[in-house]
Image 1 (tube, rainbow, N blue to C red):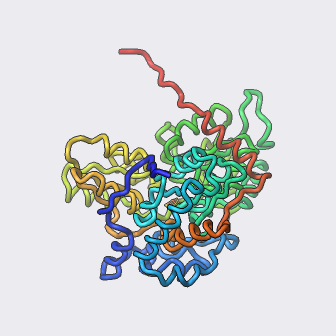
Image 2 (spheres, protein in one colour):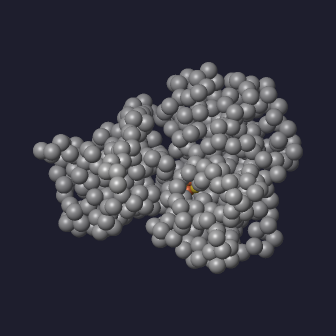
Image 3 (tube, rainbow, N blue to C red):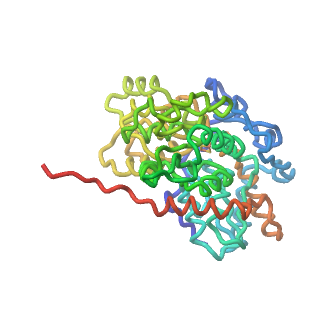
Length: 445
Ligand code: SF4
């Protein structure tokens, strides 16, 4: 199959995370939320209960999170050249039987083998463009592979090269905690599945794409919808047309930043901490709320600060600061622009004059953008190179292993979503696909 990167063409001169990690090991100071053992091969930490090296190393992993079995020795012992050669050879033999998807945040050595590179939803849609492929190898994290399984044909196998590649943010909203929250909200607001006299439901659940299939299924069952960082505003408009308030999870920052931009006051956005009764709120705060924000966050985007932006402005007069909406509200407010990975890429590509950009998102994407646009100076706001712990788990050795296993007739690390969850989860995704932005109205001056 011809390589068809929908979003970018990998640049062979792009610095890899591994070489940056070597720089860290040589003496760069790690940030306090960044794992210090970044130089370890992922298989040395895959079977431990934790997220391993990288930005979310300190986050609490749920006890039920999948663990990866030991990668066979022949892959652990192979050097980078041999792994590269074996991936190419297996890929050539498999041909159209397999599609390889690579997320923007993957290391270069993996992205270089991808047929498509993009964000989670772009990649899930790319998978549907190859209904005849037997296997979809998803070089991303667990919830992305689940979404690909939801949208692909039942006979197609979605393969996650390393089962330890979860997402700490997605894991912050477990189905048990969300169902418990729903029951508590019902105690305050009454039956949540019955509309009032105006036809509005008391609460519309909205989940970010970065959530488990179980959460998407919950949302689908309760009249809710999925959103991405690209369409969060459109989705909230959809939800407000159908409900009095929104329960938004797992990312509090995307929810807060989006609702604030729509004019929802912060006083009507209580935070729901699943470890506290009524999320740490009283009945009045819940009754008065417009958006109830789940206490989740991305440990990669949490690293960006207002101080970093001020330093960038002091050292680079005229710098354009663009951050992802998973960053804290103060950071988004201090930036020049905020938007999804696709927004950031498009904004840079559309800038014709040589410009200095300070970017607040994952380091792999920032490095790739810098390599793609040598006319601009592009750097990461965070001076510490700290990749996403879980994306980092897709080492090329795992990719070689799953491709050669497919060649041998095996289906390693297949990700499947139960039928009972899949139907409502698809419904929540379909609602998102059908949601359209509210037309801008107003009189001409
Ligand atoms: S960057 Fe953040 S949201 Fe994305 S996979 Fe990593 S932890 Fe999850």
